[in-house]
Image 1 (cartoon, one colour):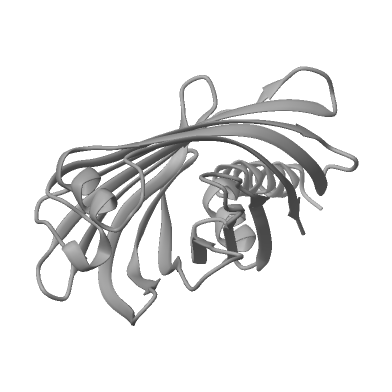
Image 2 (cartoon, rainbow, N blue to C red):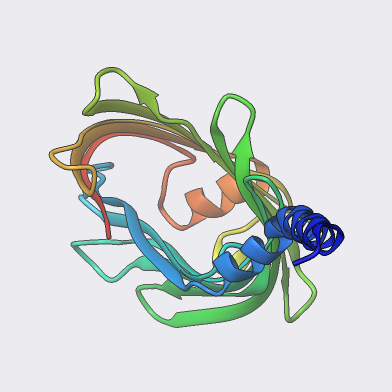
Amino acid sequence: MPRTRRQGLLIAALAASVVMSALPDRAAAQVMDNHIYSMFLVDQLEVRPVDGQQPIGWQAAGWIGGDFTRFWIKSEGEIATEGRSGRAEAQALYSRLIAPFWEFQVGARVDARRGASSDRARLQAVVGLEGLAPYWFDIEPALFVSTTGDISARIEATHDLYITQRLLLQPRLDFNVAVQAVPEYGVGSGVNDLGLGLRLRYEIRREVAPYIGVRWEQRFAGTADLARAAGEGASSLGLLAGLRFWF
């Protein structure tokens, strides 16, 4: 083979390798997003003794999807072990990665309330974010709009503090506001409530962790008045015990 031809083939091979090395980022991202992953986490499954009762509370979330788009299911609520009362919430969300560690979410939320005399439910649209703020705080702000035009918002924040490799302390904040009052759901206008929790868990395995903790909740303004009218207190403080697990 003539020397000039061999040189030409060598130059072409080098050029091809340079071009291919410039493509992997996008190509790899597309290939990675073709993989389907899933996870389901029950962050809280606990007994919350308060006011002489022992309601059971839960908070869970699961997702399925790739690296950039996912479908989320979220649920939380509380049900009394005595009497006929409780509340539950479920969300179905489409999620899209918009920045490192941050997802934009949109979907629907269903609220259900169980009372002594009747049950009720309502549907709301959801627009929110979920991600990691500086110093590894998990933040979930969300805006809700009901089918009747009622607007409310919520922000949840948690942070895991490692005491040892297996023992963790998790502070938690919940904050709710509403534009309009919705008395049938115990919601007043303005600032609704503030909740602070502290849970100490021990990871028997990474997937399974029993915990104990304390939880304080304060209702404000119209929401506090509605709680008193329903025979509940505007403020509560109590110990709790539960189990956290995921797969």
